[in-house]
Length: 254
Ligand SMILES: NC(=O)c1ccc[n+]([C@@H]2O[C@H](COP(=O)([O-])OP(=O)(O)OC[C@H]3O[C@@H](n4cnc5c(N)ncnc54)[C@H](OP(=O)(O)O)[C@@H]3O)[C@@H](O)[C@H]2O)c1
Image (cartoon, rainbow, N blue to C red; front, side, top):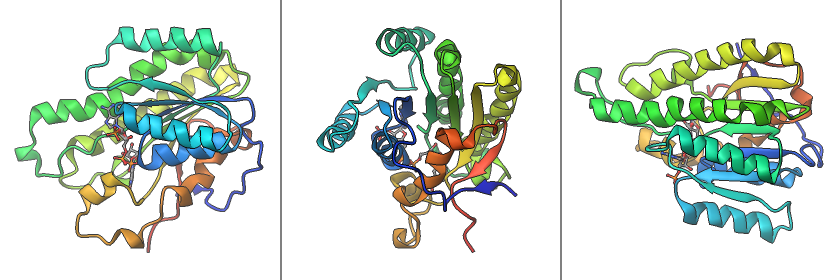
């Protein structure tokens, strides 16, 4: 049984002065998280592959008079180690540290019998959902270690905790995410300043959910905004002391 903090009430200045990177910040849950973090005081680095979407989030943050965000266009498909290190150098120059990463960008791939799974698509899903985020995290470790209190959240899924037929590379990438979280959390435990956890949003009204369950009525689902309390709790100082753990953003649906 994982812990869910959907009833958490984040204090207004929860993330004041913190620099937080959100991947896949242009849409869905990442967009909602970037806005929620900015509204609680964070300077948010918006990373994604569609610049127009990132700019729209940037404008929304600016129009509310929140801390000025930064945009970092990056496509995990095709991104190289050099891109991650260039990114680390740019963030180091601008901020000198990183107080959090929400690894949220994700690709669904196909929901299809394994016998028919396209190997090229499998590789693509693994690249976006696990390999890219891993090497990005490696490049950013020194910046996370420079923070007095940093939180790294990897986005999981219920199919990354219990396998389900036809979910192929997506499920496998999320199992790998859970495993990597445990490995890294154990490695950095001695620092005492860096938390690494996974968060499963649960069924949430986004484009990805719609493409996985086209017949579902989206009106029956929680919105990205509804599930932000757990995202705020896990990113902010109230979750200090928790690392190497798997969390849920909402209770299981009945
Ligand atoms: N929604 C759910 O019910 C649910 C349930 C369990 C887990 N999740 C997880 O929650 C996370 C967010 O999903 P969501 O539902 O918000 O999906 P979404 O609306 O499809 O958003 C996914 C985000 O990832 C970005 N992205 C995709 N491929 C990318 C790439 N190659 N490089 C950089 N960014 C890329 C997308 O950018 P573009 O907009 O530019 O394409 C988009 O901003 C994912 O990790 C997903 O696996 C969601």
